[in-house]
Length: 498
Image (cartoon, rainbow, N blue to C red; front, side, top):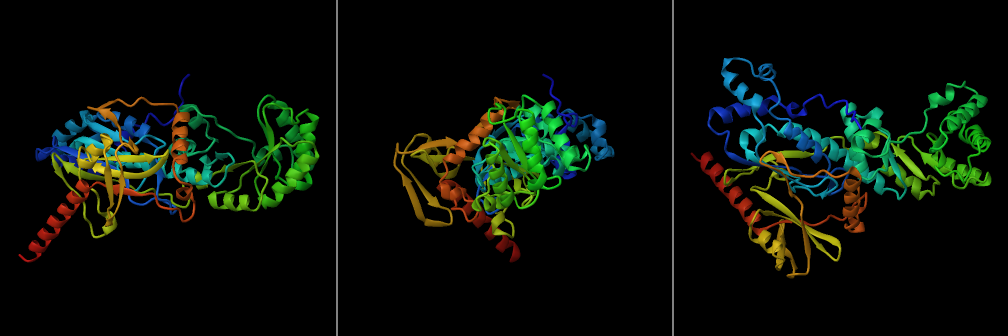
């Protein structure tokens, strides 16, 4: 079956900032282009008072990386003109990524400062990946994390209906994918569903109802004609075009009965509420439907919903069976800009860090790996180590481990040997420029997220004031960071006193 992803003609490998390539020229001219660099993509703070986020976008990142080296030299001449750039333009035109990538799986739950993606390779190749990689990951993780919050506000199904509010077709298509991985049942976007292999869904618009005339009789005719043209599939009628309870619902019941649609209909049927007091209307609609013998008729609700409104509707005892959520998910409305960053942490064998004026921007140096410690089928703690350091070896040998709080070294937790399990969060997904990750169906990615969610404590899944999951770093990583900071501070003081 032919894919119809309408935007793939654009090579997003070059959806970049100019300074990635001007820095690249300096690496090239100064003989640094082949230095081995390690970059980490991570975020510092989760949105909406969470302390975790849902990983999404790795599939597109790998495709983006594979696209390097496929631009004509004339493309680079448009933003790197002049004879002084002639040699490096030729280099960029054929430059492919030849390094290694380690990444969390799509559907993984990630915590602040953990490497979500680690790039290891020639510095000139790794540097130019920054902008397109952040563009992909920030968008998809914002949507997936928001979808997680919305779907955690109810035990009922949630559909993503936000394409018309998304920030362009690219965002709508990949937003549908991210929302599905983040817990939504489906998306209204047909390209998203077709490309990624999950169901798209939809009902009808008010324009369909009014196309039969702005009359109560026209509303009935719209319902009747719709049912007749959509037999043998799910039937959902929009009942609030004129008056939900006084005519819309009554016309829906009448049209269903006239066409033999009742609780024996095997494909499912229902009504949609898109305005008004959804608690009041759903309670009365449920009563009217039950009295008409339509106890299996579902009530679907839309209308600018988000996790806070759904939580309140549920608290008030609404009779809604499933929800459709638009811009709150598609634009991650409360926090539309996700905070992933891309930082250099090592050059050749030399760990580096950014200290900054703000303590929150201090990063962990070195080539890192994160382990998730699991006991009694629950996630207990994550610890980020330097690859191959003392704690890393102890974990992989199932030895006794002691984890210390980075902010209070007097606080520690010990896991006896053989009394825990672990998971490596960043397996290798690309080796020497070749993708080695076997992509899996999106349904498995969604289920992986749901399984991860089940391993968290309920207190860590609260939408408001959640309990913060414990994340540590190894003693070796802590000591390395402290040593680098101490050296920098000493050098700054000596520089000031010169």
